[in-house]
Image (cartoon, rainbow over all chains, first blue to last red; front, side):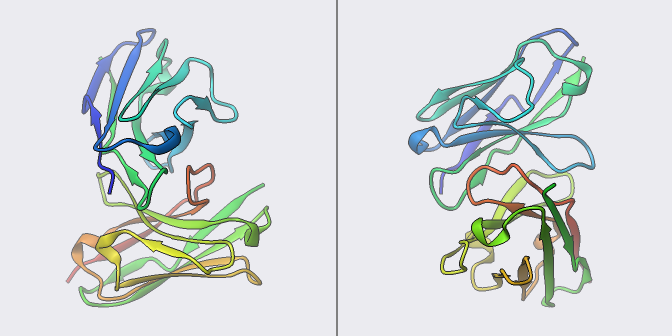
Amino acid sequence: EIVLTQSPGTLSLSPGERATLSCRASQSVSSSFLAWYQQKPGQAPRLLIYGASSRATGIPDRFSGSGSGTDFTLTISRLEPEDFAVYYCQQYGSSPRTFGQGTKVEIK
Amino acid sequence: EVQLVESGGGLVHPGGSLRLSCAASGFTFGSYWMSWVRQAPGKGLEWVATIKEDGSEKYYVDSVKGRFTISRDNAKNSLYLQMNSLRVEDTAVYYCVRGGSYIIYWGQGTLVTVSS
């Protein structure tokens, strides 16, 4: 099983600032089969990024993903008020599919 | 519009059983892998089980193997999760999701509480 470790656990930033979230895998994620999700309280997660760097339909271009192998990054170029939420990475290159433990982006 | 509507959650004692259902609409159900993902209160996401389009392949996370069974009825556009020998640690919101890789479509979730 691939273990995904996200850092930091909490990111305290102000609107307009840049957010950089990390996701590290315990072994290489094949074909960069890595996704990122955003989750707000009381809601189901929303897909942001798949294939490590492809934005899902309707996702603003301030969200970008990068990385390969074992190290992946989600960057939010300029935080908007609606971006404060919890973010999860997920690998789908091997079974079982696994998620990271999440990074909370909170208002400073 | 894709819709996934879960039902069947509730309160159950440890060792008990529960069957979750998911009614799918807005897409050709029999053409997609389907899965269950859960989230314990205040915790992260955990992939629980996945089933192939025709039901011929099924995958489970280790913690539920031998206790949970995923199934589907393509004629009824429905996905199921039979949960036996439930444990306190199975308490979570259970989401029905379309797909077996990355997930675009999620249901609203149904809460399963295992408690004495």
